[in-house]
Length: 312
Image 1 (cartoon, rainbow, N blue to C red):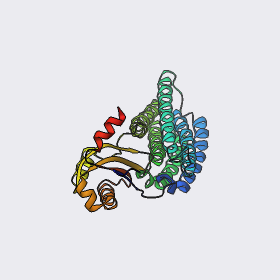
Image 2: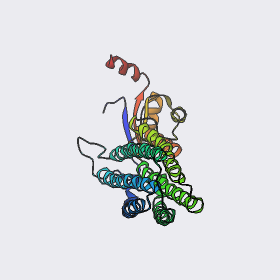
Image 3: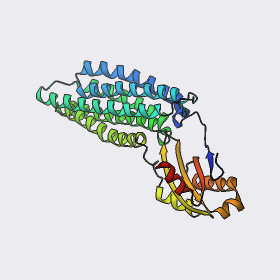
Image 4: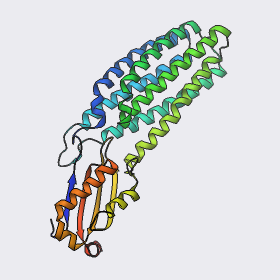
């Protein structure tokens, strides 16, 4: 460490865990429920000749795969860091969320295509049976949603699973409504219309989650962190003259990090010392922006000129 500058680190929360880890048991329970209902709806779709039920079951198959990947990602994310992977496998959660998005988009497209095909080639759907299986699916989805509702606010991975189950719940409700229409009116077009509605419910939510996931992978500033405001708060601290090379990004859900070069006057460095300045900077960022994993390089006035010369 050079005499002219110093490095400071602040670490918040568990260093080897993720926000999703606390919900591992609930994800497992949701996975078992999803697999069970998926089989039930496949059988129901075949017996009742309901495309809406088959579409919902297909979506549930994707949910099951997504939940399984979420659990696998949590396992990898909680493995300790190594010399080659200094953040461990924390980013595995984000990769799983990305895979979920791509799968959801594929399922949404498939459902829309099959619904259009059903308009071309109509089929007789048995509304009574479709209602029974739709109710079973809806009840099961509501149980899974209650297990994941809290975790979806803290983890992109759990949010992906939550949105998938939510789309399934809406899909089951749509199946019930379409089956009721068929029972009371005999209008068979209600089934492919319900299938179209399910497909259209899947896509927008998936696009939103995909955008958030790509922001993490592209190392955009953490959600809710205004970089101009961060810089302004840091410069307001006594003795801080400038801030450069300011970066903030997200490793995984619940793990935002920040680094910066902070230019400090010689007088303040001599009078206050590095340690007190680092504590003040860490308190400022952690208190105002909920970013506790920070790395600061303290530099005396004029050091940035030296850096520019070295770089060139």
